[in-house]
Length: 75
Image (tube, rainbow, N blue to C red):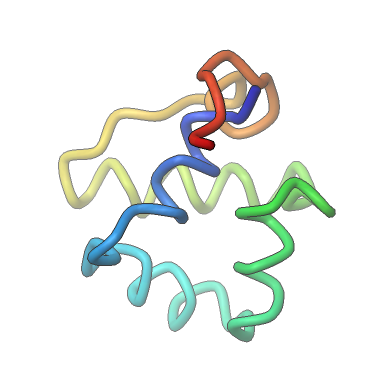
């Protein structure tokens, strides 16, 4: 199972908002990779920023969408 946030980060082609997240959060590609694979998760304060940035781009997401796995993982 993966989170909706991980699903967003794994989409191909990558949505433009992912580049915006990387730039506005000032994180590198390896951080996004670890988040997409579930190897680590964004700190709570960063998650709040992610939610706000995504809302600016019309993507509704909350803390559960970032931390709680609820989607089947693609195989």
